[in-house]
Image 1 (cartoon, rainbow, N blue to C red):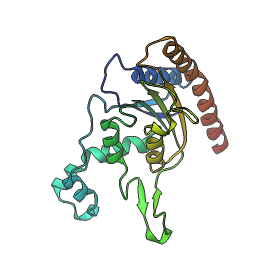
Image 2: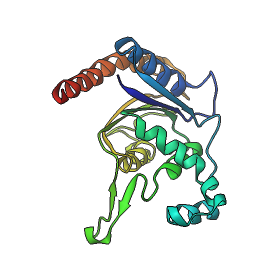
Image 3: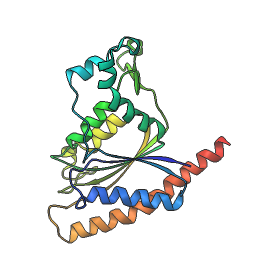
Length: 223
């Protein structure tokens, strides 16, 4: 049985293409793994608060010295980290906003990348003192972009600050494999967009089969 953390970051509701993609992935996974547990976290509709000085002070105070107010300040962060810790597969539906993350997604990352919880810091490691605590997680990004050419070699590759930022941050959450399915040409709303939508939905069951096979192989090897 697999535990999926299903995150949606779009501020849109039913019109959101990334929401539809992420839901299609979760539904396709349920067909292959009907006993899977799905933890749903809709940060698009209920975004975590941005980091404040109070939050930083609480996070960098040792656990035994925190006040009741500081523990309350970190309550949501603890909850989000617990959801992450329980999941083997993170299914992230997110649009590209201004060539980067939606603010809600950035705030989620800021709440879960936390010293002593998801990473350790040790200057004895030299120039790379941060090291993730968690491991073995897989991330699937289901995205929608208004323009096109954001992939390797594309005309807008250097403008893609969404996936590059996500992949960088995800390393500190124990993500060891990352996969992307994206819809392009949304603002053009032409035949290229329709083809991109069709290709994205067609890619979902292929990726589900690939990942489910890998999960099954790891479980068999562990038994």
